[in-house]
Image (tube, rainbow, N blue to C red; front, side):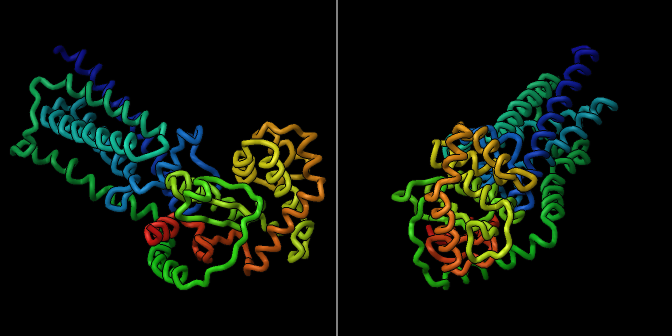
Length: 382
């Protein structure tokens, strides 16, 4: 193969490796957002309930050795890019051979993760799938560059490039440690205490009220999460994508959302007035009037500012398809007012003092808005 064609293939390999790196880096950022509860909105690749990257991130298959799979992939792509650049500018055959070894390992990882996705997961990560395709094309171009396919990377001349392979777990560990930060490490230390508290907590009588629900049916749920929250609460906004993704990634978990507006207009335990009551009513009515009530629920939590009555109606109407007239009539109905008040009153009776407050299988769960805590409780239940 002449040098011109080799350069073209090298550029193509670098291009597709960069694409896979960009996708995996974005997935890593969103994984940490979800894991630490630091984001109030989901990933841009949450296209539907079937193609939902956050649900995949919340699954038990999203990490290897407690490090996100996407971080392993992003670090591996970084090493591969450096090896390809060395080959491009120096013509080092040994760098090319090591890039082939690393590209082959990438393909094995793609096969394993693809198999896990097909067999064990109920949702798919579109960006993951695109990264798999990019990794495959990168491998094909690197394979075509080989004058002789060889996995002998332990010879004397290759040992310097072995650092690009052996350095991957070191770099992944450092990246993960820096991304999580001290606050998350402190949370991890307290998970055992949260679980102990939950195990020893008294079981509360939580009647089943009419509410927006998500996940498994009442009959099939091994774990039932009841959340008391306010749509205008910043902590609730951060908890929403965590809870949604956790439930989506665990088919035997059910989530019930009970309104606890920090607004005296429909919560007698609160003195001040605000817009939270209108926000709660609009979401409840969107649930009552359509089959897309959860879409209105998600949209309301993803808004960046409080919604007035008119804005709440517009937002829920756009997401659920219910007419503005029907929504307005439902929100004015005495039944709607009584329903929201009943949910808020139940929260007060259960001792809810702030939002979000979360119960799991009728027991109060401190830290229940954090993904690692929910996962640990789930293990205990099973």
